[in-house]
Image (cartoon, rainbow, N blue to C red; front, side, top):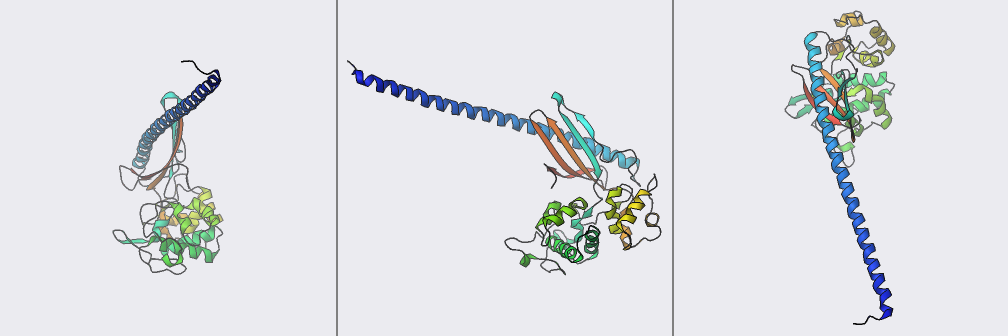
Length: 318
């Protein structure tokens, strides 16, 4: 069959168009394959980093347990254990680094309530609200605002709808309700009525959300001078931040042994929140492996031996 010469150009153009379409489809398929391969490699590297982080957790737990066994009655900063990195060399040039600090030197937001039954919390006791308000005052937050935040935080956690003085229950919120249970992370405070980004930023270094309604006890033997507001919070009402800092600067090398020695005979009801050992420890882990980097924040419960990890959080602290 003889082909019309005029149709040869159209046939060639059709072939070229087919080749171009196939080339584009092949390029797209190769790009998807490349992306899938990279995602799989990243996932594998991430899982490997998490496994190394768990190994670092075990190492840290052993160190904390050893620290408590050696000195069960009095934990001090002796030995340089606090916030000092210890590494876990990894194959392929990676590294896992862990740091342990006292995890109880903070105001426990969950201490604003008391547990009256499993899963039922009451904010009837105002002791911790007063203490939280005092802490905010020491940080320069106005009294009226501090009372609103402390009352609102207590109402946020408790399981009833009885609004506390200056507090806030469901009716004060638009579009959502109070949690009615313990806070899992201090960042939940940002949802409480009256808490602005500036207030949360000022409070964040001083607060925590321990998994208990027991008020956190302040270990005066592990407090740093820059943490003086926490000591002033539980000290006599006349104790200023500067005076509390001076007490920490004069701390004996072996640490304090009783509240009267700390406050010079001015011990008050807040002295029950003074401790000389530690029952909670914060753990920070940074893992770097080829293809992945991971940050972990964890909490170690040392209220009894052996110590145990009770929470972990991946990513940056909030």
